[in-house]
Image (cartoon, rainbow, N blue to C red; front, side):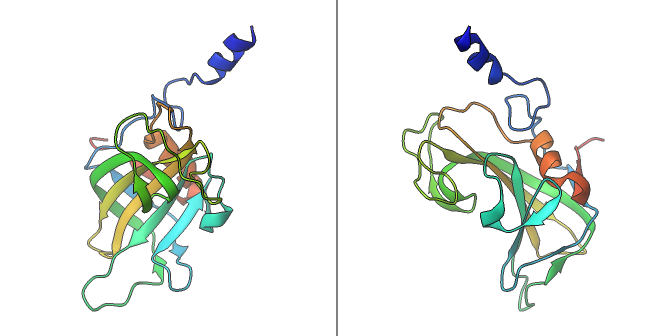
Amino acid sequence: MLTALLVGAGCASPGTPGSRTDTPIAPGSVLVLEEGMLLPTDDARVHFQAGRVTRYHDRNRFAPWCSLGLREDGDEPLQQAIKPGRFRVEAARSGARAGTSPLRGLRVAGTVPTLAGMHPGGGGLGHLTWYLELRLHSEEQPQVDDLTCAIDRPPDWRGRLGLESVRQALSGLGRIVPAGD
């Protein structure tokens, strides 16, 4: 009976954040940011989870969390805030890393990695950081480069991050409009 409960607890219904049924986000989708976000001093990323801007080290690593990143655009200094607006998804990629951040750490090849990072901020003993990176484009805010979302799970996890996970992390900050809608 205990085995049946444990197995059943891992099952997810369609459209569950961080599950096998989390809907992939295709190029051509649009991120609609409805709230502006100030970037931390001298930083090129702003992190958020459950509709709230948060510091990276204050996030719950076992629930979907995201960050918006900036890139330098010529000689212009990095903007201090990301304004509300529309950002078109140019490309999407996902995978897993042994490390603390979806932007740093060792990339893990294959579907069942055998080594996990051991850092107190993420990854950690027996866990990998599974990520989804969406390359973004906006004529109005050309420095906004990407939306990267992540969650820490065991190395044998078979879910993925997608539309439902991003919606959970964004909550009232914005929304994703899938391509074709």
